[in-house]
Every structure is written in C-alpha cells, then in structure tokens.
Length: 526
Image (cartoon, rainbow, N blue to C red; front, side):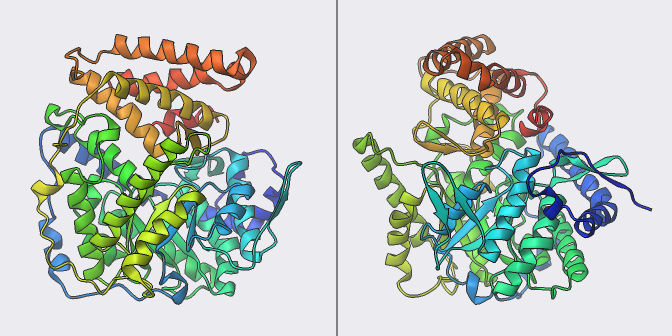
C-alpha cells in the first residue's frame, strides 16, 4: 500500500485542495511515473558530459522520419484559436484577478518561474485557480476590492519543471515531483471546472530538454485524464522551447504530444540561460551583457524562425517571447523608449509569423495587440502561413556571436544587483519581482548568475580590458548590499534576507561546480 504524508502546515484552503481523493491521485502518479522522471534527469546529466567533451547537439538521426513525415497535431478548440496576446504572472489572488481582467486573450498562471514555491503559495494558488474557473474568486484589501469581470482571459496553467521537487508532499518518504503535484492538483480541481466551462484544461509545459520528456508528459496527461474521466485529447498543452536541446527536437516534441499539443513558445530568457549552461565549459560560447543578447542575435533569430516554420507545418500555434518591461509613470522618457522597443519586438514577431506573444504587464497589452492586429486583422491566427523560406541548420542554432556585444562593468553590476534582489524576493515568498523597470523571475535570475559564472570561469574581459574575477564580483556585491541597506533601512534589510540571498547567489555564481538550477539550493530555505 502506498503511503503519503502531507508535511506542509495547514493553509486557509489546504483541506479543500488536498482532499483524500486528490492526495491519492498524487501518490499514484508518483508511483507510476517518478522513476521515469528520474531516468530522464539522469539522461540530462549524461548529455551534459558530452557537451563538456565538445560534442555539440544536432538534429537526431533516429527521428528523421518524424521530421520528414506528413502529419499534424490535432486541432485546438475555439477557446484557444486566438492567442494574439497572453499575459503571464504568479497565482496569488490579486494577480489572477487582474490578469484575467487585463484585456489579454490568455492568462498563463505560473507555478514555475514567477512563483516562489512556498507551501502556502502553491496550495492557495490552486484554490485561486479553481475559484477563478468557478467565478467565485474575489479579494478585498484596505485599499481596493478585486472582482472578476464578465469577460475574462482564457486561463492556461504552467506547472513546475521536471527537475523540481515538492518537499511538503511525500510518497513513501520521497518528495513528489513538483510538476506532477501542480499538474494533477489543477486537473483534479480547476481542470474539471474548466472543462465544464468549455475552456480547458489548458497548460504550458516548461524546461523540456527532449522529446522523451514530452512523451512522459503525454503519458501523464493520458493517465490523469483517464482517472478523472476526461476524454483523451481534451487537455491542450503548449511547450516552451527554452532549452537549446529542445530546439533540435521541435518536430519530435509536437509529435509526442500531437493529441494534446497547442503549439510551441519561444521562451527566450530560459533559452539564453540554457545556451550558457550547456556550453559553459567552452570559452567560444561566452556571451556579452544580457541586455545585448536580443532576439536579433543570430542564434536567437534562428530558433524563433525554426519554431514558426515547424509549428505551422504541423498545424500548431507558434508563440513569441516575453516583453518584461514595466512602465514607469514617474519617468515618461524611459517608458516611451521602452514601449517603442516593445512595439518593434512584437512587430518583428508578428511579421515573422508568430500567432501570439507574451507580456508581463497590463500596460503592454495594447502595444502588443496593435502589432498583432495589424498583421492578423480579424483572423484568429496565421497558422496557415507556411514559412517554406526558412532553412535553419544546426550551425545556425549554435552561433554565439552577438553583433556589438561587449561585457561591461555595468553588465556585471546589473547581474549581481538583480541576482541579489531577486533571490531576496524569492526567499520572502515573491517569485515575480519588479526590479529596475523589468519584471524579473527565476529565468532572468538564472541568466544573471550563469553569466557571472561563465565570465569568471573563462577570465572574460570587460570592454575596458579588465578581467572579470571573483574578487571583482564580491566587491560589487559588497557595494550593492550597502546601497540596498541604505535605501531599505536596517530593519527592512534584515527582514528582506538580502545577506542570505547573496550567500546563495555567490554559491551558484562563483563556486567551481556549476549548480544546474539556482532554485534547487534556494528551495531548502523555504
């Protein structure tokens, strides 16, 4: 008999969310699939050893017939046809209500990079999504009341990646996968409610590194669907192409999920992190300041083009990347320049054939909507636009050159400052943090720390000629911590856990051994 233990403390709605039936489903899922999940994570380790030896990824010879085959994914329901602007954010009640009311076509509720995985955040987030589907979600604060409007965005849910555990739910003493926990609980509660409302259940699947990981997701979807009496093919999932290895397996990933696929998304921030991480031991793959690595960089442009061509050939949506800017009403000049850059970015995506895009702030919705309206008109998407002109080689996906790229003292300082402030936010329960007019999440923090690691490891030089060293990084961190303390005051500085944030950041950015994900050691503090 399988034994499970709920190790987390009671939350306001934990009894409603973690019912005996729901917990039994979680335990059975763990027993059925966790060994496969662990095997796939070991495969990642093996591939990394190959990359360290100088073997580069390529399109798979054994799946050539899938890439060359004439097949399409199953059609999506009407509720998913028009996705021209999607907003993303965490799963707290205020965010869920505001995002659903934002005017975007879709809202991706994020249990992953935008949510600090405290037990209360996760459990109450599940309650919030169920209440949103039932249209009973509301929030009253001393300053404002929040209610859902009659017309709201369509809800999609992103569970955590395969690598993350959920230490507060144990099966035979072993933590369940965070991905299985998030997915199955939403399916059990909100998914069934979404189905009854005619709009789901819909998902985003993060951090996949191979089509075998997509196959595991498909088997999990089928298993849970059968357990809950939901017809196979009802669930629709968009896969984020946010690892360099997944970029070589786009066709195969769509094929594995063809009954459940609703397309691919260009997860640009994690993709940059993956590019650094996979080739971290090779000096030829050192990237410049993260602000210089835009979607016009050759390797970023190539993967976006390949994504659009692949998706449309298979009858699937191709979704563009995130606009993370947060408008600053106190600085109209900065806002004006940034909105112009957002508009140009979204124009480029729409003209390239993307069927929709992401924004992090409601004020960006009209900007993005205008660019996609201009291209799409009254069509829900442009899946019928075949990009037969696109030819992307393995070499195109692996070009590290960035025109005008440089590593600057400002780039080092930004990475250190953002890394400390984001980790402090994450440790105190907030996974999406507004920092310097940008919405930072775990993915952007990963870029910051992996760049520091890469620059120090290879003795990269600033545009001034000075090498980036660990002592330089520590000196910058001391200065940034002093600045934060002066701004916050002693009490808020201590409560904000900035010193602990630096301890974690320095470990994942400066230690010799590269830690695969910064959230793994940081999770022990939650």
